[in-house]
Structure formats: C-alpha cells, structure tokens
Image (cartoon, rainbow, N blue to C red; front, side):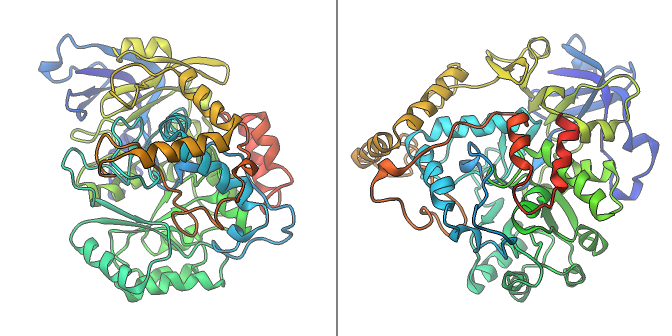
Length: 516
C-alpha cells in the first residue's frame, strides 16, 4: 500500500457533471493505492486516507500532475521499431487501406524487416516497443500481435489480451482484416453477450469503396455500444447518426493525414453521441506513442477549425477511453476514483500550470512516473525508489537516465537490462537471413503443442491483408534489410522525417513547436 501526493487531475466525473471546478481541474491531494492494484481512496489537501494506510509510503510529486494513465486504443506493436514510411512514386493521397500495401517499396521497407524481428527475436521486439509506449505515459495499449501462446510479463497493459486473471480472452475481440457478413453477425452476437469488438472499419478517404465496411457492419447489427470502430475516416459524418446505440470511434489524426490527406469527422461523431478515443497507430505512419498523438489531435483540430479544447483531447486518451473499455472489462480505468484500476502517470509541471494544456504539451522529458496496476513500472530514479519499486533497470531516455521494470520473459523475475534487449535486436539487424533461418529451425524442432506455455514464442504480422507477409518474403532472405532502431522519443531525426513527406500538406510540421 502506498500513496502519491500531487496536483491530482482526477477526471473522476461523468459527462453530466463536466464543467464543475471540482472534477475537471487539478487539486492538491493524495491518491491511495491498495495492494490489489486498485485505487482505495482520493483525498484532498492533507486530509488523512483510510486508517489502514497509516504509516504507508507517500510519494510527494507536488506541484506535478497526477493523472490517469494514457490509453492508446489503436496500434500495431510488431512494427513499432520502424521509421516513418512513404512511397517515393506516390503523388496523390492513398485511397484506402488496401492501396498502400501494394506500393512498390512497402514490403521491403515495412513488412520484411518487421517479419525478421518478429520471427527471430519476438521477446526483445515486444520489450522494445512496449518500452517505447511507456516512456510516453501509456499504461494500456491495443494492437498486440497474434501469437501462438499467451505471453506473461507484459510491461504495458494489453487491451486485446487482458483477462484480469479470469482466463477469459473474449473480453475484447479484435479484427484488423475486413470481416465477412457472417463474421460480423457473429461479433454482433458476442457484443450482445458483453464482449467489446474493436474493428478496423472504413479506413480511407471519404467516398472510397471502403465506406461500405461501415454499412456492412450496420447490416450485421454491429452498431452497438460495444462496437469500437478504428479510423472510420471514410464515413460521412451524417452517417454516424444511424449508430443509435452510441459506441466509439478511434481517431488517429497523424496516420490519417500521413496516408490519406484527410481524417475522421470527429465533430460529426461527437454530435451523434459517439465516444471518440485516440490511437497512435503504428510507427510507419504514426507518432511514437499516444502522448505524441495528443499533439497531433491539437494541431489537426486547430487546422480544421474544430471546437475541441485541451480537456476534450486529454479525455479521449484517458477517461473516455476508459469508459469504453469498462464495457468489456467490467473494470474502470482512465479515472482516478475509488475502485478504479491504479494506472497512473506523473507529468512534471510547475506550480499553477493549467493541467490540460500542460498534458497536451508534455514531452517524454516530462513523464516522471508511470504506475500500472498499482506498481511503479517506469520513472525517475528518485520517484521509483520512493515508490519502493522492484529491482529496475537503467534506461536512457533522451537526456535523462530513467528506471524501467523489465524482467526476463523466461522467469518474470530476473532483471533484464536494456543492453540485453538492444544487443539482441542488433544481432538480427546484422544478419536477418541467418537469424530467420535459425528461428525457423528452433520452432520446427519443437515437439510439443504450439500453445504450450513452454513452446517457443512466435508472432504473426497483423496487418494489413493477413497474418503472412504481404506479397510473401523475397526468395533470397539476404535481400531483407532491417533499418536502424528508432529512438524512444520524438527527436530531431524523427521530426525532420515528417517535413516534406506524407500527404499532410505541412500541417504536421507544427509538431516541432512542441519538441523543438
């Protein structure tokens, strides 16, 4: 049991009470965290917590902000070591999600290197991309790759795979591929039984043929509160009104503009009563994590003249997303209130700084502590020590030396160093052919069931047209080249790669104003 004292951005209200000073700003208080990973109480100023917390450690971060952990509702983790990708020969925005996978350079630039890392060093790949998420304050993420067996020891809460110890892997159902009418009808029935269905739906420019994916989902009975439509940027805003039992749309503004030159009709979705959540998508066309996507949302909303204030944008990645997840999980996240899951982030802030503007403008240098399930998983040496975090590994993040809860996947206890992770990734980069062939041989030699907990871990690529590499692998595996690992932060090199590329027309160049 322990507590955090700071300027609490609780977001504990519902929409009916939004606007009250009590619940939408920051107040000095303490968040009391129980041993079960839940929030036991939230108290203001110096008022005492529950009596059983007497004498427990209190980590004082005031005047910094204590907020709910960020929720990334759309990603594809297997690709998140890669740089931003563009097709040099493409002069017009892509039409839809089936257009860019056929581009001349796509397979060699994206699919082949992702396949090499996912095949030869799956554990190190996942450690790297989860770390990239957590340094941006992400505590829950959607988009873990399909795998042959469950993986223990996740660093960041996995939306797709979370079962809260029940063994029920159907709390959240996911489909990246366009589903058949029969599959959509099955998902409609599963949603009625309580599952959440996260579906890549109508991704493309308005008027393109993929808009029918939305009408197909409607015809199958999927437009329910449990339905989460990722992208839906090909849908005309007026068509959202047919979604009478309001569900959720996931908005990825950077990726939308990068590939298609336009984005989801967020005002139309909100006017229809839908919840809008945020997702950073994947590294080849997205920001590094959802903290970066907050800024993309701010920039795009301002560019399009939308009336979205900073609080509304922050809610998309915290309480609003948490409320949607609660429909499938039966547990609350994204809000700081008693009984909610203790997934929290400390954002460094000076005294009196406006909370929501500060959060939107925060960079990786401002994320001082990340708590998941009540345990400090990442943060500064001083704060992780004060939170009595377990043995942590040093992690260089930008100009800071941070601490990370990273344990070896084979036992879940022994500390795994960041050098161990990156050295293995670099071995695969140095000779992808040798490493792929070795991994294939090890998997072929396994004599047990593929879903056995001791089976070698094998990942599949989850997008965009199936579980196998798009267009297959080259006949000669020596043709595979894995680019240098991307940094964990939005650094100068990444910012420079945004300008003059993609189809955002210079709009996203404004990200440099936050990171410059």
